[in-house]
Image (tube, rainbow, N blue to C red):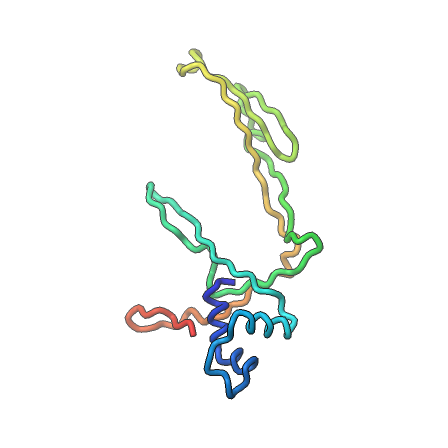
Length: 166
């Protein structure tokens, strides 16, 4: 959950009234009160996600938010703490090998390529070694993951005002 959603929930009148009562709901819930309230309703701990990713276009870096801050994601508790597994996939050179390259399969989908360049290719003499691994994430409990949209984001506000959080 995005931190802004957590604090929006802590300031919401419904949660404040539910935990503090109607006579004391003029203040926001504290972190401890919010956690205790969720625990009393058997709702698991909330993990805040506040990550940004650098995206580069034409040499100019831009930070983007890869998450939708208006969505809460519920994931199931698993025995090993994992949502799935990573499976190796075929490398392109396993399907269409280059005849001038020597390939070795190192196991678990890792493929080592070794080749040389020299006068016959019109380049400086050199030897190259490259390791590559192509993997596919497999989410085994996809049907147990729930995305819940918590704020109405298609409300238009005049003059480009931001959507109110509280």
